[in-house]
Amino acid sequence: MQKIVIIGNLTADPQSRVTQSGISVCSFTVAVNRRHREGQEQQADFFRVNAWRQLGELCGKYLAKGRKVAVTGSVSVSTYKTQDGTVRASMDVTADDVEFLSPKEGGQAPAQTAAPANDYVEVAGDDLPF
Image (cartoon, rainbow, N blue to C red; front, top):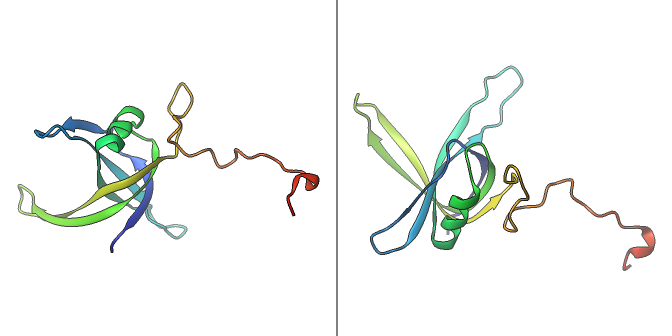
């Protein structure tokens, strides 16, 4: 079994469409920053993500350029030749799960998104069950 988990930002607004058989799909590209040492230039890898059916509809509704997401799915790599003859590779992810890590601008994040990392409830010692 093969799974990939990526966390990054959308490079553009997602593109939603419906196949001839009536299945919705949302496609978007996620830029994932590589770790780098101090003084080195920041580099990123780009993954094309396809989210199908209800997941795709949610992505199309709530995601936009610049938003941070965590995507879990399977990856496939294909090569293609550009017009100038250069061979390039494309990494395509079929999403099983997309977690929205940035809230929707101008309002509350939808219920399907992750809570902010600093959103916690303090528990006093008397409230602990052990």
